[in-house]
Length: 155
Image (cartoon, one colour):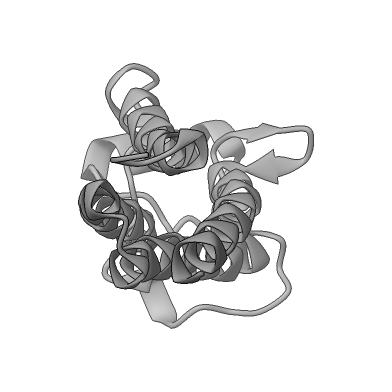
């Protein structure tokens, strides 16, 4: 078989879907990204670059895809942990506005006014997970898929 198989198609589509979801949250829902959000997006862009090499059936290129989703997942886990209060990020997280003592509505209004969100404040959650938490979880699943694909390509 030439070109990527089903897994080789599904994995880049997973990263593309997460990128599109992040853009949707920003452009449609009006949730401005923080510096860590940009790092998570960059990881998925790296994974998409790695996917280009899948047409050559190349394990090193697949490794780049795995590196990208792994990086994105790690940043997402780091951010989700800060949002949950498990650890404290460096002051201001890249110049994000101070949201301490504000209600969720006032915090969102301040984030929208400055155009940059605080990295340790989750303005949205589904089933108890923020966008960063969902990215960490889904990136972990994608990383597992990339590992399986690398194993298959290395045979």
